[in-house]
Each structure stands twice: as structure tokens, then as C-alpha cells.
Image (cartoon, rainbow, N blue to C red; front, side, top):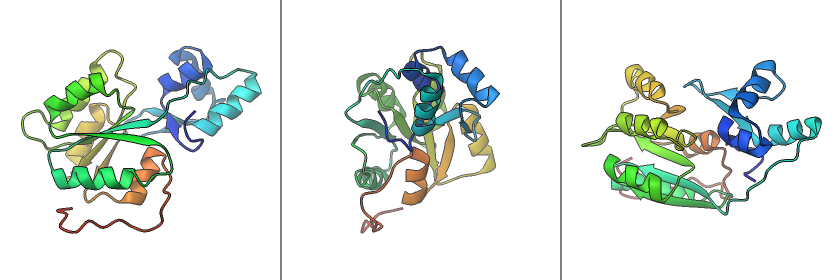
Length: 201
């Protein structure tokens, strides 16, 4: 199972408890299953809270062990992609990272890499992050993918637009490692801050 301090989507919780997503939402509404709401209005559940709930309800968890957490970075800036890839690989969790440099390639990798999380730049030539996010959330079987937007232009308008498209949050560049890890539910195995010489961040 995922790290006990990491968050899962309603669909992932439903699979763990072997119930419908509607049942999970109903438990959350009643306050029986603790949930956190993202800025985009999506529910997220801590693994440790799910385990506690399952014990109380005498439910056996349907645990499917994944070797690695898959994160897809989508950004046309090579320096940012390299920076994010490096800091993600300082996490204690076992992570697999792939990089996509444009929105069209991201669509292909969604169907070949099957990421759990997408770190998505908003401003890209061709197919921008807003349309990529909408595509992810509207495609059958991919609505469970967590989308975290990243942008150098974090205006209120852009934030509201990407949240409406289905992202659960929006981080401003330069990306703060501590903030990123908190949002992703990761813990770091190193305490020092990584600095890349020549980075455009």
C-alpha cells in the first residue's frame, strides 16, 4: 500500500474497500471516513485514516501492491523537468518519473506510462495545460489521475481555470520542494535543499 501519510482519491479508496465510489462519498459526508477537500473540490483520503476506518468496520482491505509511484512531469522547459525529476528522486518513497515536453506527447504517455500523478505546466505551445487537464479528467479510466498544475504565472484567473478543469491544486514556480512534497504526500530522505547551477528557475 502507499505511504500511510499519502493521499488517495475516492476511486482508489473504493477499490481498497471493495465498494462503490458513492459509498465512499457517503461515508465522508457522514463524517465516518475522514477526508480532505482540495482547492478544486476533490476529496482526498489519508491511507492511515482508511486503515483505521477498515478496522472499525471490520473490512478487509483489497491491497494491490504497486512497486513504484508513477509521476509524469509535463513541461516544455527542460531545466524545470530536470529539476523536478532530481528532487522527486530524493523522496523516501519508491518513485518512477517520466518527462513529457508537450501536451500531445503527454496524451500518449498517459496510455503507456499510466501515471498516478501528473505535474502539469499551464503555459505550453500547441496544447496547453488547461486542455491537457480537461482531457485527462474526461477520458474514461483516467479521471482518478491526480493533476497538480505548475506555473510561472499564478494569477487568480489561471488558478480558477485549472481547478475547474479538474486539477486539485496549482503550485507557483520556482517550485518549493517542501511544498511539493507536502502536496504529493512524500517525505524526503535528504535534508539539504538541492540547487542546480544554471537553472532558469
